[in-house]
Image (cartoon, rainbow, N blue to C red; front, side, top):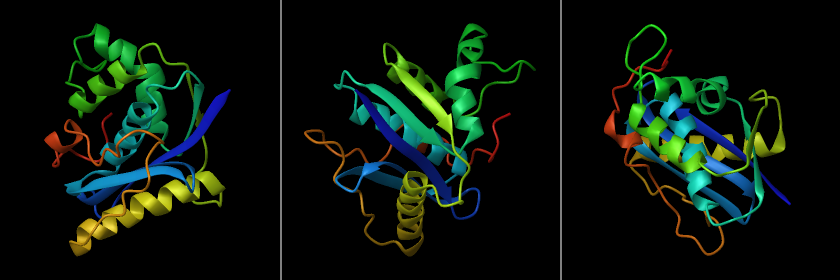
Length: 175
């Protein structure tokens, strides 16, 4: 069996109030965010929190994502960055390295397939994740309660990654 989920991030300004969300269906989703962070951190965190929420599941995981950066970071660039001591091809340090390291750990032993979906064209699951991520960012902007969602059955809802909150001033692009 395969769990299919969408993961998305949102930032109102970049950096600015930011949110992340993953979505399987109306009874299985989660969201969170920060008063100030970047869209890329939101995108990465959505995938990380989905991996954490489903860590005890033996099913394959199919992640729909509108972020080429996030997909490539998890599937193409991560092994090279790790081999090079968390440095990019140009020798500069990988940005958001703490969350990238957490993703590396969370992906170990998992059967995960990423699929890029074009954002903002009406893909139902991507739109559901996008709305929840944006709603979280807007809640931080208004300084109001963030709707965190029900999470994954039997697992507590994680509302923010410690690594992702470590560098709220990171530039919007990592490459």
